[in-house]
Length: 112
Length: 118
Image 1: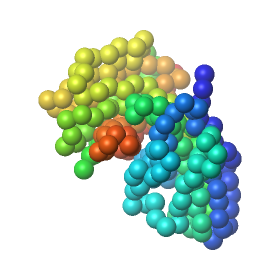
Image 2: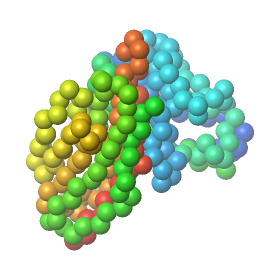
Image 3: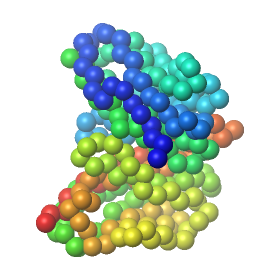
Image 4: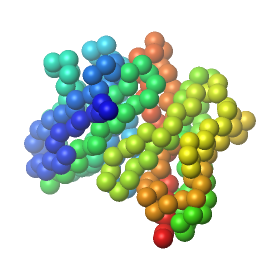
């Protein structure tokens, strides 16, 4: 069964460093998303991507964040200069036709 | 703005009990989707069900059932004869369609931690 794959599963980085979180969505899906879940809290929307551009971003998704779909299969989230409060689980999701979002297993980002 | 409220933060039951997880939502749209996701201790988000706003028919899938009532803006989830493996955080979520259909972002509730004890 096709699934969304995220790498790495866990990343530890120093404050101020850049990180890139990688996702391989399900191959025939058209909508792509990043969500964030701070430990013990709810899942929050960060950004949606459709037709090779951002379709919506939340207030959390400031200038430190960017997304790319560099080669038609990968979907990346970059945080330019990480802060302690960026520590969270980051989920990638994809959706074929605006129906059901299937989530990856998440990347746990720890900023020290 | 859309909002999802899961008033029950934690529920603890004994195996084989039935349990209902509540979800109340707010939206100004007439077309929307409602979802339940399960997050087991391993952390992934597992899709359980989607309902669209035009379909109020209740649904049953094995031990799981869902009750959607537009009149009360509720989408409750019942697990019958609960099992230890049902222990997880359960999230209710709402999806609206933005103009042009380019985005179906999910708004999640805070989740309900269900613990099923043997």
